[in-house]
Length: 291
Image (cartoon, rainbow, N blue to C red; front, side):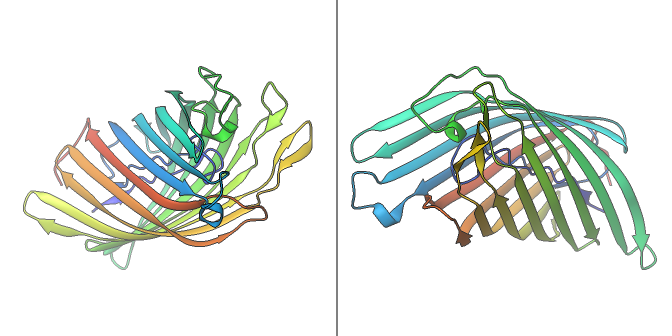
């Protein structure tokens, strides 16, 4: 039986920059409580409505993320992640770029329910997660927007609830999360953010490998940034993306991939359009047990 470990959060405006990233460990056997891994994400945004003008921009954001989890028991599961970002903005006139270590992210997860349904043929899982963002402030780059800098420069906290119904051949996983950013040393406060995710998995055994192709729908609602308590970026982003991916498991190792596509979008101000959003993760389970 496979169970959920869904660790997917955004930390800032997903459409505007590198401060936002998704951490994804996909599905894994429930008894694999300790792991470490590396994930890489690549996103590309383009303002196509003004592509003919000198103000047109193309943003590219690449992030490598080192992450790991240590679990005392089902109620105390602690995660740590450290990102390194390389981001750039290209216009008709020039290219600006920045790179460096991003903000450190801590998570505390608790599994509250692991219950069998229909005589054990289906299992129900319910998990909560608390998140904390510790700003490193290692990069003082001022030529790019705040959300494109590796370090956002402010503390943040978040909470999410993850649920899953799983059988031997399929699983449906969902997540609803909220993240709040505090004011930084320049009295700038990033908007709060809601994130929802729904995934449908199929389990395909192929010898020593376990394959889990999946389809997903991701929703994001991003509010307004403030400085000195005055709104400075009235984006009010609302986004609904469709995506697909493939998880591959072999004993202690896992490969997780996700590709998202532009779906429905709504903004109060003109913002770049999503062109590419790709995430790949490699996970090593420290305490793997055979099923």
